[in-house]
Length: 362
Ligand SMILES: Cc1ncc(COP(=O)(O)O)c(C=O)c1O
Image 1 (cartoon, protein in one colour):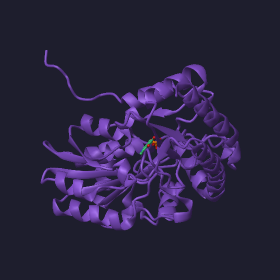
Image 2 (cartoon, helix red, strand yellow):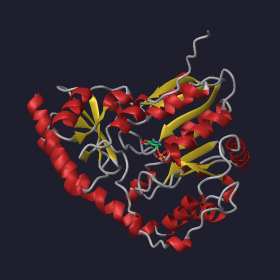
Image 3 (tube, rainbow, N blue to C red):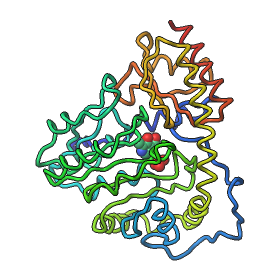
Image 4 (cartoon, rainbow, N blue to C red):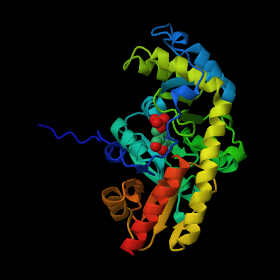
């Protein structure tokens, strides 16, 4: 029997789902759960079934209003990961290459391999402050490249990529007829930058995002893609192969969430501001730890010269009821990623435990 070699699992997701129960969860890259009780929802406002086959119009308008995107440029789906998968799928052709930032969110690589792409990488080196190395994109791009993929803010470092750099990447992609897909699931957490979606930069930009990370609303799986109408149509038609329509009640709840986004943003900002201060104090105390600290975002990627991320993670889980994400999942085992989205008191206690473990292991 022929050996089936396509990637059909995500090592990172399996690890994350097995370790979510830690009392101090600093492995989560998004905000803690925003509660349904914090939204003005009456059960009688919701209906179980409705007409929304190619997008629930009220939701398309809410998303479009926030990001200044027309409904025909929006595809809604089950979170950013599925949004990424749909983008990868509709652009795939046999022999296609994809250029993905290194390091990045592991699921993007696994999904690209699953779809069938030859995966090539471009650099974001720690020594360069995790900024994108344009020369390595130029080196790796070819006539077979269909897509360049990056995250902005960057997972794991939260580093911001500015529009000038994105435009340069867009030009390089254009020279071979490729698209640039920017996963912006963390972008709104750079509150003070008030960044615009890179979808507006040029017509070969595609953007994916969701309410999951910055707004702490993961359960209703409200994800979206911005792209030119032809690609959006392809996604709706590909979607027909998988499910008839999204969960109606979830789409109605997403509309309510968008109508209350100012309040949710204030809640998120408050938690992240507090936790950034706590994290700064921790980093000042532990001078041996190295990081690029952009001062915003929901995660920070930290290097320890003495301890590898896996050993630290293991001890924290076994002895300190604390979870962090090992750098191994980003191909950088000397690093670990801290998520800043939990309750500030829990965040402070979790970091204290990280510190105790580091001292014990040093
Ligand atoms: C860059 C990136 N994209 C997408 C996701 C998943 O987002 P969602 O929950 O909206 O599917 C994550 C989760 O960690 C992520 O880091």
